[in-house]
Image (cartoon, rainbow, N blue to C red):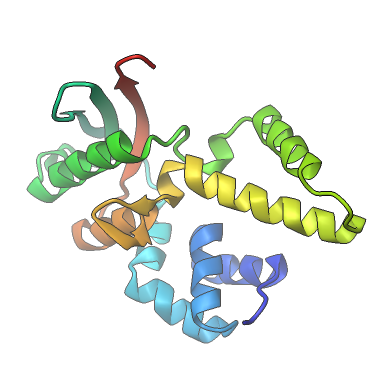
Length: 196
């Protein structure tokens, strides 16, 4: 298996504008080849989405989802660029799908950059305490791996999408961005569960 370092991921990000996790996955799939990774990202619509990512999203909808049994409920703000897209059936379906995903997967944050640094530091301490008898370098790699896995579990955009486990939520949103032609962004969400 090819080992992918942060420098290579950074180089791919600079070429494509795609997110860190998406670039790392594409490089792993492409066995470290930048050219093949760019093709993979293009096929997934992630480069198109990245090019639109800086555009303002002042329109959108609030979508809700109540799970059967009425014990879990979700409110989601999904943003887009125009009110025309906010009325688009595919956009509305995306909002419904993300709500269902949130109900099922219980993410704590939208993305890793929104996880407070104090929470990350605390998780690193916990992960490091669980590693014994290893060198400093090995311990750091193990802790880094644990933190990456943890972030993938708690961040909505990095979680495997409930309707297609082969892609993450961000990749699903990117595929819709490629079809609709506007920047789409999860504004915020809240998940309610009886007894929580």
